Amino acid sequence: MSAPIIRVEGLGKRFTLQHKQRERYTALRDVLSDRARSLFRPSKDQAVTSEFWALKDLSFDISPGDRVGIIGRNGAGKSTLLKVLSRIVDPTAGRVTIEGRLASLLEVGTGFHPELSGRENIYLNGAILGMSRKEISSKFDEIVAFADVERFLDTPVKRYSSGMYVRLAFAVAAHLEPEILVVDEVLAVGDAEFQRKCLGKMKEVSLGGRTVLFVSHNMAAIQNLCSTAIYLKQGRLVTQGDTAQVLSTYLKDTGAAARVDLSARQDRQGNGAIRFTGFHLADEGGRELAAAQSGSTVVFNFDMDVRSADVRDLKVAMGIDDQYGQRITHLSNEVSGQALNNASGNARLSIRVPRCPLRNGNYTFTLFSTVNGDIADYLLNAGGFHVESGDFFGTGRAPAEDQGTFFMDHSFKLDK
Image (cartoon, rainbow, N blue to C red; front, side, top):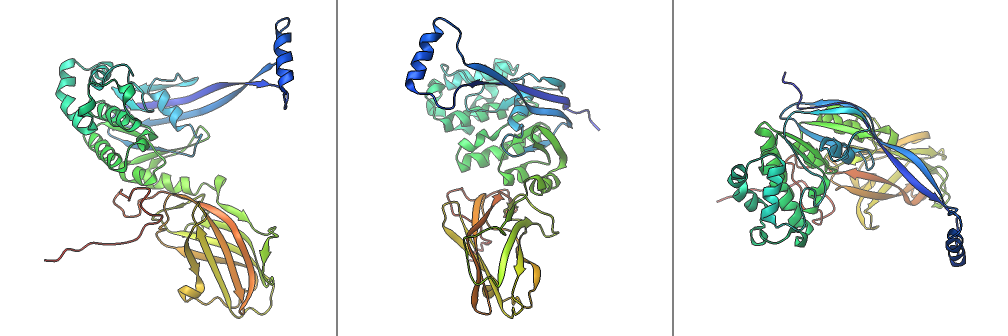
């Protein structure tokens, strides 16, 4: 086994936060009088400091040629980790050992001088990476063609749009042959076609034996590109390993399970023959999920209190709305032709959706039920859940975000 190209040992990064304490409400006259008094004595404002550990006790190895996806919710420490690895930020504790040349693309504008032209910044970045002018020139045409900025090469990059900036920055980072390529979510600034080009280039880079570290909330991109993954939570390492297994752990993180208590809801209609008391998401094995994932089986579980002794015909419907309140689908046992009879006591109703077709986003649902033809329980906007992006088609590709709200199985055939 080859020696790791990146070794992280006991890594920690602490930030010191400062807050000023003032009265909860300050009138203009108070501000003016405070300013006048401050001429003769120190201000009454008190600075309060607190510590925040963005990373805590991280240890892991990355081997040459690995394609590593770094996942976690907002605030997990993903970007801070990349900044430490890129030597933009110094660690507070532990150490990082890197064997090889590292190029990073973390924020729009990172590594570019705004007053220099695109041409000059290409040579500047190459020099920073330790390349000779001859080496940079040999890659120059490929960089310009990939970034599609030939018309603006001699324009100062401060006049570039954010999309042009990112295209050129990625082209420079990917083509100047670093041993390690580090890319943050910044690619989301580009259009869908450019994002596909970038993912293809990163895969090409890794197949050439170089290492790629990729942070993204796009789980489909992580699945398609990355052979291994790292899951961070509140600055700590939860797990590292095969991408599919790490994603499964991420989605099943019960610390953030999608669970809703419906028992105390008073804004309900119906005769009370049944009452919905709870909701949670699960996978096929019954393990609770924090979020559903496009393309994976999800089970909507509803706990019920059956109060009627005579339930011959139970009908239940679940209406799912998008973040704008638009109804996008309706799930019903009447429509699916499945009878629900003989319910009693505390029961659980499960609605199984194979290959969840919903796209990344937040959704709400409304519940409606009838017992023996009469409305039993009706809850408008009963709860919500989140869907993470996934590789629905198994190709690592998906329509642009503005092209619809759900996925649909389809195939093409061309006949003569």
